[in-house]
Amino acid sequence: MTYQAQVEDIVFALEKVAGLGAARDAGIGADLGAEDVRAIVGEAARFAETTLAPLNAVGDREPTRLENGVVTTAPGWREAYRLWIDGGWGTLTGNVEHGGQGLPMALQTALCDIWNQANASFALNPILTVGAIEALEAHASEELKALYLPNLIAGTWTGTMNLTEPQAGSDVGALKTRAVPDGDRYRLFGQKIFISYGEHDLSDNIVHLVLARLPDAPDGTRGISLFLVPKFLVEADGTLGARNDVTCVGLEHKLGIHASPTCTMAYGDKGEGAIGYLIGAPHQGLRAMFTMMNNARVQVGVQGMAIAERARQQALAFAKERRQGRASGATSGDSVPIIAHPDVARMLLSMQVLTEAARFICYSCAVAIDRACAGGSDAAFWQARADLLTPIAKAFSTDIGVEVASIGIQVHGGMGFVEETGAAQYYRDARVFPIYEGTNGIQAIDLVRRKIGLEDGRVLTAYLDELSEIAHRARGANRLELSGLAQRLDVAIEAVASAAHALQEKMARGELDEALAGATPFLRAMGTTAGGAYLCNAALLASKGNEGRRAALAQFYAEAMLVTVPALTSAAVDGASDVLAAAAYLEA
Image (cartoon, one colour):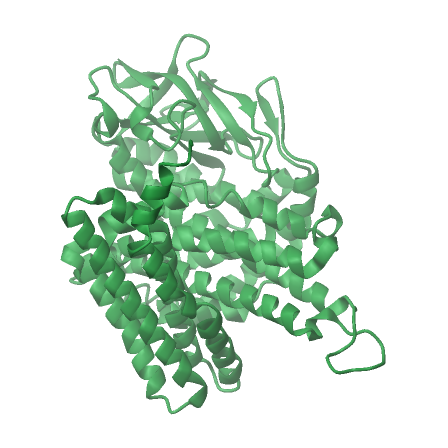
């Protein structure tokens, strides 16, 4: 199957549904017109279709290799990355002062969608670099910015994020990597695991952002500092110097994303210590790293949604070509394409609406981040909106990626379970996204413990009011096909609001475990509800001639997905005590 980026759907989602056009009308990114967006997305699609997509299966079959501390990427990777640099794709959102174009994150998010649809293993590298750039721009000294940002923005150097350690996992407060002061710099000793693109042959230098502890650090997360540790030391004039004491000592053999090197990194293995430079204030490293992590969480959500889109395209193409069985009611005649069978159509529709719901959520979160970064009197409002949507964008969309890729295998039948069709790769690739950048359970806990209570619940209330306004407009549109959708949406919104209130009351009473036991179904309920509202809004905003298709998709989502929200919120609130009661028997 030949991959094709759905440019018009992506531009519609970005400009209309997620609100980039409305942000432009409000003066945010006014220099980037709608036609500019379409042109950039179109050119990104061409690059993805012609350069990245053909390498996707190649990288799966011929993964990265480690020999004597040197990682060699898959065939074609180096040439593709050189074309990436030459095209200026890494410069989009970077600060103009350091060679970037200063374009909105929302546009970069749409392009991240395309890159990951074409080749998720390749696209992971730029995602990390963009996050490193944002962390340095927000927290690094002017000297470090001047020395490192131009090459990172250009893409000639790449960035990584080093948090996890063997004994710590997701508990970063338990990390043990240490940083010893050495004049105006530090020497780091320790080991990090699961470091994506920690070592590779694509760029001239790799800039590691590493969490470590100073000698006087307090225990837990309050004692973590952030350091910039380059693979090659950088001289004052920007030229590369000696190799630093940082080495890749292992590559993980993974279920999926085979062409993305997942490294075990050793700092100070030679005994001299890896030279690093403090970013931000001592013991404030987690705050600085969260700048990178929050960016990464939205982009990981995009990765999940993008894999879903690629799996959907392949399943649809297969269903149109694969002939099996007769049409319903036929007593004779040739076999028909399986897309003619209602259950296959149901699976394909599920794949489509779930993917679109996740896309609308991720793009909307990115637009909120842009509007917050733009400053102004409403910046706090948009920052709170981004804070609320980030865990949903990450967790809901990556869960969708796995589900849609799994449905794609089912559409293929037995041919989906063998590697020749390629459907299995999407499932294997998608499975990591709910795990990294904070597992989806952690995202759900964050949503319940911190986000639904922002400003005493007013942030959530304002968001649900906006979703209710979409339902109200659908009822007033005098379109029969939207009336049932509006009713389902109202019920879902009320269920989410009631559940959020109940969970906050539990926490206020000190019943924290009761609340957290229901966090995952609550997040799913919120994501499902938001997705339904955005699909409804898409039907209202659709261009003439496209209204029927969009309304039909939204109505299908309402009857197939929105109807689950009351059950999910019941599980979140009323089923939590049953989780805790049954948990006592897990070891029985």
